[in-house]
Length: 418
DNA sequence: TGACGTCAAGATCCG
DNA sequence: CGGATCTTGACGTCA
Image (cartoon, rainbow, N blue to C red; front, side, top):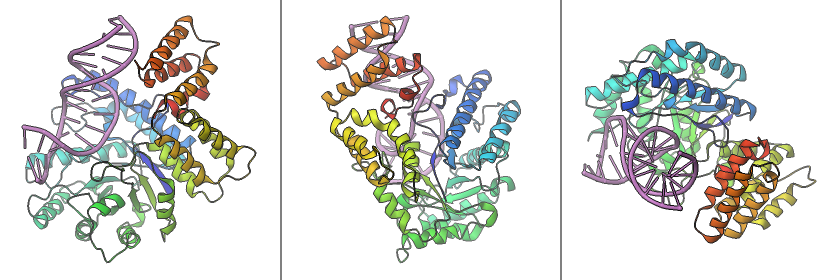
């Protein structure tokens, strides 16, 4: 069983992706962006390996406009070696990667032009995974598409167009239930006709339910049975609703107790769980730690090192409470640990606590900073006290100083990235 | 025609 | 000029 996250790593240097506008998508520009993005991808892979995360979704945006009809950029030829070497790192680490074209890749559209674009896009995704020499367990997860007033007809169109795809796309394609058109029942029906494996998405199922005689777990099992041996472990998407968010939007972070209840109820844990959540790797590590049967305290100490200033900036008393919880303990209640951190995270901005955290962090930096850095800090501090600037300006400046002095401890702190 | 989702790029504003 | 903040892009469907 693996738990993973999608597309981007929060709080890790050199992992952010570059983008460009279509008007700037010249070959030389795309070459530069692709090169930068492959370095970022490798840094993300390294991060996953280092954090022992074994499931990861690769962003579709590594090669911008890769399937755009007007753009001819031979990324496979130019970066083939690079991709191959990233691929062998992935394979060596036993990391399972996947890709997920967005909601605008619509294979069942009545417009032939849209279908052709969708096919080109699927070709790109398959070619990318092929270039990594990824195995058949590296999947491309796709939504079925539009309904166009007649779901039976639209499903038939999907099946018809699916048959037009090359075999190397067939071996990677997986379909997922979505939040307003194709329910688990609809997707399973298409799966029966085509043999395409199905990803069960819990939140989409909650919002767009079907087969209500079955429990969620029975449906996970049913979807899991569509996966063949060569497809790897069945995979599901797991997310939680954002409180007060629009219909079906993903939560900012995973509520650990809720996840643990879901996980505990899973009759067969031999599946992979892709989290869809705003805070990405933070929730992945949290969930992985939560289900670990005998988690070494060291792991929570490492987490605490990354969270502590974030907590301090919300509440000094909660900071002390968690610190005491970890002190001299051989065992710590992982769920309780994360519940405290998440509780602190949801607290509204408290000027006094923010200032306390800012001063605390500054204590690590003021000895070795330049005069200009010091002056700017004092100025921003005054402005924040007066209420004429936001705390983010101060934090940005502190992070800049931390980088200039290469203070590893601060550079990795979530305080700067949440 | 705008909402949907996503997050930098790009544009504009401010001191 | 640098930094902060606001707007746009790129995609297809559907109300």
